[in-house]
Image (cartoon, rainbow, N blue to C red):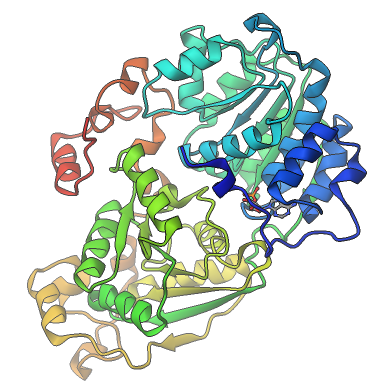
Length: 496
Ligand code: AMP
């Protein structure tokens, strides 16, 4: 795990509320000391709104993206509330789980845990993180010693419940962080199971970047008379992000990405791909072009993904090529640019993706590439964000004839097979051939299909933690041998 001090620092780009200070909330001196260790003086808008409400014991429905300071917004008042029970006894019985923070991904769980640990450092409260894909034994040992605040992904949490290493009967506060993503990832049954294990009388906090009908339904089932806190319009994109939409030829998209990276001299950029294979191929292409790039997706082990993330944060890797699920929850502040190599199948994912940049008040660039076949995805995004893009041309970009030809002759993709290109920059004979609706609908559009199985695992059998994670069957089915082989080819199988 990375060093806390290097992870959490006052971010000068975070818009804070200068008229309010953390000291105004009546937080304990131990918490204020931890905040001053971080260099935080003024709360961010969501913190200013959430802290007093949570301290009153109210339920909260928070519309906030990562990067707004929402983690401290819920953790600081939780720590304050739990201080009433804090003690230095060595007995595990004196440290029951009193607060549970659920997150969809391991990365987010890790990041939240680092924050909580830093804010608790001068108090006797104990916190720990549990997530799947790693050895369960150290987590079991930590839980057995008594822990007041548990940060967890749903599957591994249920493992611990089943093993009786975790008892939730005294949990008085539940946080669901990035609830929309948890639903996207199929965690609803696990969430319901977990809610049933908790005392009926408890405080519930739910945070979500987007508010679909499903999310509202979930909120209605478990939040009691919640206070709604909204720091940015839901389902809207950040105002400080410049969004550009470039029309390109499907066959030369990878080259277009390297061209943009070179031209703009980009040093820290996340490129989004809709598929794991696409991510790996693009990362390889970029490396061949002399760009330090790494793919981060579900076929990579937890350690590989953490290592890539750390190298990216240190600036050793300039480009992270990520699938949506892998990128979700990554706390990379002040990312200057994100690139959509593929337009996402779900318009909501566009909002999440571009939320990676222009975070915390900084300005950012969101560059998207689209080919003819993506027109409908583009229109869906426009409908969602209520904004009509100017369909721009990528000036100065000339695809290498050889690579375009190689793509075509390799027969990859519908465009290549049909000799179709976009209507611009290709011979006029091709221009008449437009993509039809049926060509578009052959694209996999199901949410479930595009999610990496590695991340799903709603309930991981305990043994799964000790064995090769790539060989673990995803919920509801087994990995086909070919898939495992493919993971190996992509360098994605765990090394131990
Ligand atoms: P979060 O949205 O919780 O992931 O927070 C994003 C980042 O904002 C954190 O990693 C901190 O660097 C920073 N941050 C959070 N709260 C504050 C604050 N009150 N003052 C300055 N920086 C903050």
